[in-house]
Image (cartoon, rainbow, N blue to C red; front, top):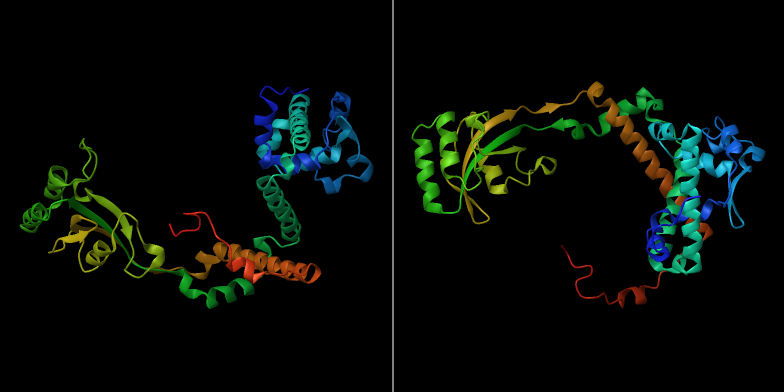
Length: 338
């Protein structure tokens, strides 16, 4: 029998994430090793593959709460194939059973203390029940590979703009916190500094330069801020590259070119260099097929979710008190924009 080594209250508070499982799984204070051994092949199967008689076989009890072979198999079903390997031996199955016993012990103690009535626990239970209901819907959906080629092609034509990948440019920058110093560095760079000289200036002057020089780092990539797509492309932004720097690098023509003006952003001054570029590209249908199939499944899931929610709203009428909603007063700071 697994032991409770911490005070019941602290252990119970850790129960919230697994409470629904504990509430559904019933466990006991004695277990039959022979029953576990005899269930070695059956328990690895999905609960739906067990007969009603097999699924109801009791493996253990906690008080008057049984844990059945069906409960045991359901836990295994939720694991991936690598996790299941840990529970193929007799010793492994006993460890899993002990975990379920622990869960029920904590669940019973939590109920005794009324923790299941707390708002945060009830909210978590509602979320788990929602996910369980949606899981039933998802199981009826086809896998991505079963969508017809015609459906994939139609999706590609309808959303072709999604598969256009714009040009991306690699930005390097010498960053200073003094405008006059930045102007002086820019003059040195524009005087004819090549990649090697650029690296020296970066390590000598940039406030972003590391304390130690990496001898293996290409000097022409010193001050690398990463890739960025053209201004206005939402997907190709880069948090390390301010918008003004982004606009500046897209005025340059050739790799190695340096902007002829200092770029100011957020109290810093950037000497901007174009250090690389990748051409724009439109992914072909073949290149995009896998992601399209995933998107088709996601769209179908969303459609089924909406249909289920619409059906449930018919069965369980929803009434919103707009006056009460408008009169809500939140504590200071709650709900404020970040």
